[in-house]
Length: 135
Image (cartoon, rainbow, N blue to C red; front, top):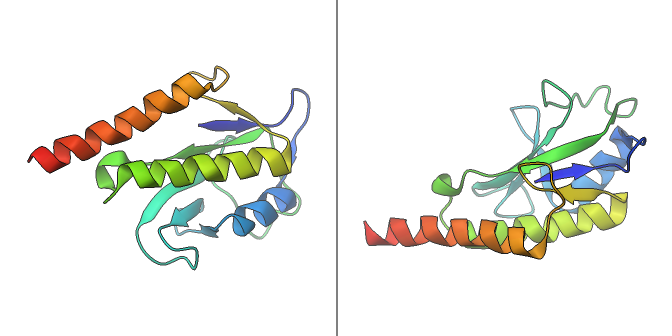
């Protein structure tokens, strides 16, 4: 999912970092923010948040001066113990980020995210869970 600032505007790095930490993200070794199973940063990584600007990373030394048109949230469904629960946490996180930072949500094709698209993504997570339980 892509979270975008309003057209012609940029998201401030300091605002992004503040809200990211508030919703449970921790800065990870890949220089992106990661949301772990537990809000204290322990447990498996459920999903990550990267900068839309190449190379997609953040620099904590300069984050207060940086701006970006948006961020991308992504997860590896196959790597998760409970992909459906992880997806639901991601949707809650997206809802909070968009409300706090006045962002729009776009899907993987950069079209406006709809409830139908969210349901489709949730079904993908269910399919991964189902296939795993069949093996």
